[in-house]
Image: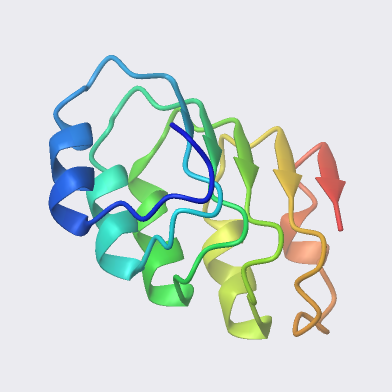
Amino acid sequence: MARNTTITPVGLVSLSLLTNLTDLNLARCKITDEGLSAVAKINNLCKLNVWYNLFTCKGLTSLCALTKLTNLNVAYCGLNDQCVPALAKLLSLKTLHMFCNRNIKVDLACLSHIPIIRK
């Protein structure tokens, strides 16, 4: 997927039909909560890059359905302290990129199960 693109929720629903997809780059695509909900239906997704997008904690929570997700990039997404519990529920994560989310001020101890956190 190309960066700096707008992809509609309908387009993301179409992508969600690609259930064997394992790696998806949606960086700078203006993804919203509705779009993340569609992405969460791609059951085999292991790597997801959604840096610099427009979703909130609600959209992030929908990603908990991705039990094979090992690598997540949510850098530059304007996340805040309320989003940290949703990230903590992503138990299969091995790498989390969350730098430049300056509104996260809480202790990240609940993310200690993630081996690599880049903040």
